[in-house]
Amino acid sequence: MTQSLQSRLHGADAGYAPAREPTIADPVAFLRRLASSGRFHRDGGLGRIYHPGSVSLRENAPADSLHIVVHGDHISAHVDRVSPLDARPDAPTRYSVSRAALHNVVGAAQDLVRLLRGRKGDHRSHLDCRWVWQGVQPAPDPTHLLEPSAWSVHIEARVEGVLDDARLGKALATVLGPRPPGHDAVTVADCPDDASLDRARADLLSEPLAVTAWPPLRACVAHHPAGDTLLLNVNHGAADAFGAVRALQSLAAAYAGDDAAGPLDFLASRDLPVRPASAPVSALEAWYRTAVERVRDLLANPARLAPEQPDDLPGYGFHFVALSVADTRRVANIHRQGTARNVLLAGLHLAIGEWNLDHGTPGRRIGVLVPVDLRPPEWADDLVGNFSVTARVSTSRRHRSGARAALKAITAQKTRNKRFRTGVALLAALERNGLLPLWAKQSLVVLQPLTRNREVDTALLANAGWLVDAPSFGPDAGETTDVWFSLPARMPQSLCIGAVTVAGRLHLTFRYPRRLFGADAARRFADSYVQHILAVAERRW
Image (cartoon, rainbow, N blue to C red; front, side):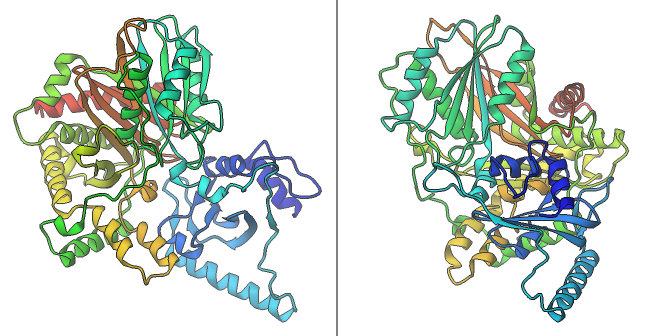
């Protein structure tokens, strides 16, 4: 490894120590640190075609850009004389046609020079090695661990009283079934104040879980003077928002001594009873709409949220808001165009548009991803898994001219998404395209608004629905006062808002990368969002 490459890797990750040979104690953590540093662009969309089946990280620099490629247990890195990325501080990093062409020309010229000099096969690699995991058989695949399936669903519940650590461990064992765990799934944190509770939450949610690990979740009991909190970190491949809520409910029932509580069906393989033929449009019409939306995405990518008070730290921050019963009723019981979900969406588009306008980045298209649950009703109570696809809801500046215009545009778009069964057609298409090579299927995935291309969207709004009663841990623990949940927000400038209505009160969790917001900025954005959704519900504008 050259000294320049050593120093650049060292700069990206303070935990890396240069040595005579490239030695990295924890390759997965190292690569995660690179991906979340804000200095690297992870290839997605068209960029994935260049390195199918691999993880590709390109440094956000126009020239002499460090390029790292991971495939299985193999890692290589080199410096590109010309980067194919258009990396500017005032705009999102993306591939540029002209720069990609120049990148290929320069690369071909360098390869030709090497060939003439008798150095065929050099491939410009400054680092080319494999890693070996000591004491682990079989070796985990770091490429898999870097995929979105390793992201975490966050869910927590606060009670008025005290949760018993040992009793909770037994309840978790009941929920997980007889299979022995591969790690200690329950930890305990003493939190004398809210700041220490925030640290316990951040520590738990910063720990990635491989989908192959058992159990696919970790729990933390945070003892707090105002009442204990149960925190759960659930692997996103093992559960979506709806599955995580189900897991919390089962854990609470087992803790309370409910005789009906039993093991959940984690990681089960089921065929979804959903087919694109059920959509009331022709396949040609659906694919035409998909192509038009994809072209629009390439020509006008959704805006990014303007950062404020960013911190150069990895991981997430959290902000929580609970509406009163009266305000929740105003949002949920409007007798006019649109549903409560559409009100939440319209308020978010308006809040983002206003926020970006105040920060000098007005006018761009805003895209918000919305998970759609594909479960049939008979699966609701006995199965935990990830059975959601995401549909994008976009607005232009014209749509955000007021509450009425935003609600109308979003309601119409949600109706079209439902009619075209957005995302579902892709599932069947990938099943039926058996003749396509693997790289072609991987490229098709990024042509639809599924979880893999979250990086192109401004925010994610996940609504876990309405729980008539909060999960009860029994009389000894006291009443459950709050339930919060969120999905992962794409680094470094995306935002997730998790919404769940519990006992008549809407609970909103704002989960943001620390490189996007500081705590005060997150609070101000949350206040703006609440004002907008109430204004949309009342149609004040």
